[in-house]
Amino acid sequence: MSASVVPADAHGIAEAARTLASGGLVAFPTETVYGLGADATSAAAVEAVFEAKGRPRTDPLIVHVATIADADAVGDLDAHDGAARRLAAAFWPGPLTTVVQRRGGVVASVGAGRPTVAIRCPAHPVALELIAGAGVPVAAPSANRFGRVSPTAAAHVVDELGDRIDIVLDAGPTPLGVESTVVEFGDGPPRLLRPGGLPLEDLLEVAGDIVVPERLVVDGTTAQPGPGMLVGHYAPQLPLVLVEGAGDVLAGLLDELRARDVDAAVLELADGDAGARELYARLRALDGTGAEVVLAPTVPPEGLGRAVNDRLFRAAHGHIAAEANAATVQRILGRLGR
Ligand code: TXA
Ligand code: MG
Image 1 (cartoon, rainbow, N blue to C red):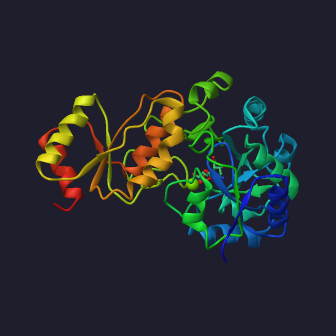
Image 2: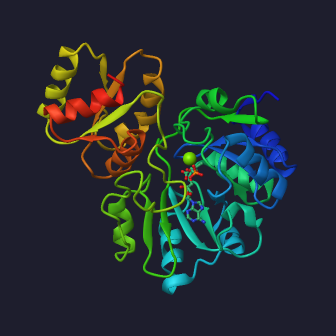
Image 3: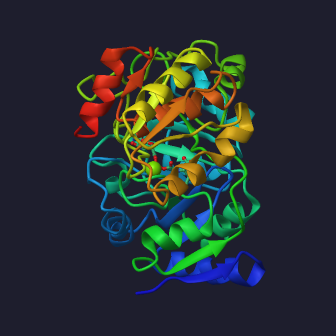
């Protein structure tokens, strides 16, 4: 199979909607990243998504809907005195995913064995028209192979999955660049599972009682906040080190590494929204550079900066450098097998 890349005009969207409705796999733009869509009412179509991505069957999928009424058919938004519904009313369509008790209307495999379902209504006109046109809820993980960097352009999808899916709907680069914010409504108070395209500041204004883990995952052995939030997700092929602290830590490390003939690249992102927008394309580009290691300074933890730091931490497999001392340099060299 080889995917056809189709412009996201009325004709292309209609063709993609027919493909979805008949069990095919369609990559489509959302305001966050490109998704790999399948009919969430078809066990075979959902299975094909796991297969195409190489995704573990234990890692559940987000169901995308066009309206709150369609979400009501899939899951229970009324838990916690309606907190999930209030968030949906405030932020949908938008980059917020709510995890709630699953109702009927989708196959159980989207929940990967859990009684819950993640639901989101994306704020991209192409996505909304596609979902409405297909007439079914659409299961859609990010359209990359498992563990790799999410796609923010149609060409990224073709690179990752071009030989495994039917259609890529091309609407240019995605406006936000990081995945949706995921909030779980379970037994205790609502919990942030993934910082993302909806800034935490906005979320807290509407629902003040959300539990926010301090550092979502500290190392590979710490309990995961949610399934599919592995350290080592969103990773480029090159080793990456997250650099914390003032600019002199970065300068000091660069000096030390260059003195040892290590070809170190620096990934400096713009603050806030602009940094989020460029994050994944920049991570992808690093693999072509021939550098041995990438030093990535954190960005200010405000707005989308929180999501950017989270993704960089995962891309770094949890490796943080907070000082430019000998021990830190040794750790980096050790990681490079030197
Ligand atoms: O912005 C986005 O959310 C994009 C676009 C395409 O909508 N989608 C996306 O999907 O990022 P994915 O599959 O790459 O990430 C979904 C995240 C995973 O961490 C998954 O484990 C979590 O949501 N998730 C899905 N269903 C869940 C559930 N029932 N309980 C807990 N976490 C869930
Ligand atoms: Mg993903």
